[in-house]
Image (cartoon, rainbow over all chains, first blue to last red; front, side):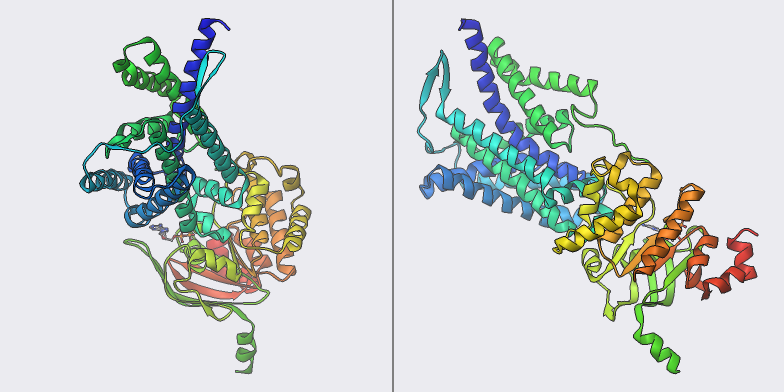
Length: 295
Length: 244
Ligand SMILES: Nc1ncnc2c1ncn2[C@@H]1O[C@H](COP(=O)(O)OP(=O)(O)OP(=O)(O)O)[C@@H](O)[C@H]1O
Ligand SMILES: [Mg+2]
């Protein structure tokens, strides 16, 4: 293969890895928005807590990768449910601004709570042996394969849940009109809790994978990643699950390509500018549409 | 005296001193009525009289004070999703289809709590017999149905949830005259298979014709009650609600 093609394939692979992580986080924003039309600004910090759980489980308890991943997902899922019950549910009838400010507050609480626990940054132990293969000149690492395949697996699973199961059907119904869903015999609060659990669980998975690829954590690592994932969700069409995945892979690609050609300080500036242009062209996002509803 | 006792054993729903308060507005001022098994009871009244509020209180969508008993069980503080399971199906005002779900998914949604596969299939057949159009559109998004088709879907969905009491809030709203006739036939059909019906209607004429009994509502109070025929003949009703 020519040098050029190899170079591009290498960049595409890197973009796919980054996009996978953004996608897992973006899904949480989009699911919560879909069901409550609320933006959960604490979500980036749930991702951070995921990376922190991963650090605790692997360094203090010495657990290996799979148990660390599963327990982290379980831990953030419970955290997500708790946040919704304690902070958002009491405000469900309140103006949207109150909920958004509360979400920002919850995020700051999580950051500063984590900050108070220990000195930072912390080094996460190597969870998986990182083997690198050379495939026709493209270097592929075992961690890269794990991140990409696990993320794809989780996304397929989520898509299946949302499109094919009765819980997913209830979620979609709630996103259309929450007020009449109870008339179907469906406990809305339970479905909302499940949505938060799934979204936060995916953020936990993203935190673990992030720690796998970049094994240094600190309490503010979720801020920038969170904003980016949120924008991915908006670019894809907020509330739309497949859109969030597409938005994330676009951002991953843009970031990797910018770094490949421009000074790395240009990365976020160019990425955000492009995303804003995309939103100007398609205000509802790539897959989002204004709702068709006959009256 | 003995008549009252016989009626009592037959009562499906009993509403006592029902009051509903929205922030500043009191929508229902302590009204009481009963529905016996097998009846079609109609509520008529002007816009804002409180008809929908009554249905919403019964199905648990709105908080209320007073008492509502369904088959003897007090519904005060029972959450809405549990009230459905007790056997009350509510077709809300204004085409409550889930536009982002297919017709089939809309119907499936109403079987959330049901495990009786065979019975569910029988209900599908029944719905397709009543509304052949729904069968053709099964995999179409409900939001793309015409208004009349959406109305058929919500009635079908209520059948799916197997209520013994069916609350219908203006099922004929916005339908062509021929379809209105059809909807009233279907309501009668559903009633004939043993479902008790509480019907809210603007179309007082049609509603009173199929009603066993009716209540007239004015600003949150019951001002008149009688059989459908009695009210059809009442001069007060004629001038206020029948437009003649
Ligand atoms: N969610 C609410 N918040 C505040 N006021 C409400 C609410 N819902 C209804 N109301 C008020 O309560 C009164 C009764 O409303 P309701 O919907 O029960 O009337 P209705 O008889 O069904 O009218 P229509 O024939 O127009 O459907 C009205 O004055 C209405 O403005
Ligand atoms: Mg009404």
